[in-house]
Length: 306
Image (cartoon, rainbow, N blue to C red):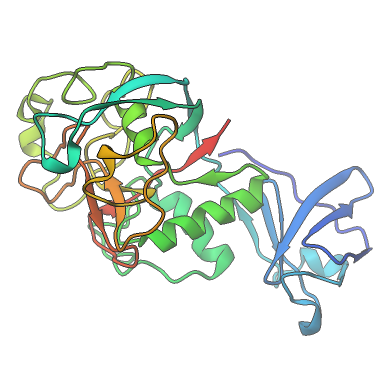
């Protein structure tokens, strides 16, 4: 994680009718956005000790003074996701030998985008919980699930989207969940016809497979990445995608950048699960649950447009 220098508490008065404001620090301009009473700069959050009337999504007036340095003010370092660039291109999506919802195998174009190297970890998610006062996952205090480098689990689709929106405000970059097409494109790593991110070898032949995932997900990034430098695609936890799920969507999906159906009752997810009998899933395999559900084998990784 990058280290950021504290902002000098030069007395400054801010007037703005918008959510975006700029703090004149005396040394340089520091871009801020405000939300629910806190100000966010790149890598630094400071709770503004301002009058209750000013604690609005659109802050009209905030005074920043030497109280910023006192113990009442919280400084929270944000962990910026490590992203890998996924090139644009055509690929074959789905599998004609798979389940019905994987058919038909079809050609899809995906624009270039970025995808997180790792599943979002408890360490990363903890910054969001603290800064936004977001409810903790039910597994948060369970030692089987709360190690810093384990993927965060028991988060709903709504929780994952809220985290992406928070990152977007913090860094000024549009973070989001990947689409199903983006996820599969990234998982394939440029290999068109492989069953798994590593090829066609059965999961049981993976290193130490029999001794992994006994009581929960393992820390991210322990084993080799795929060809695009991405870890745990296909194992550890299911990963939320942005799309609504429709078992028959492939028969009518657009060729370019499919976003999923316009409505639905379940959100799509991809990847394997530590608690399944077969711990690693095929690259084309699809899954889904309602967006408000929170399961101990559901997590996510973030994406960003380029």
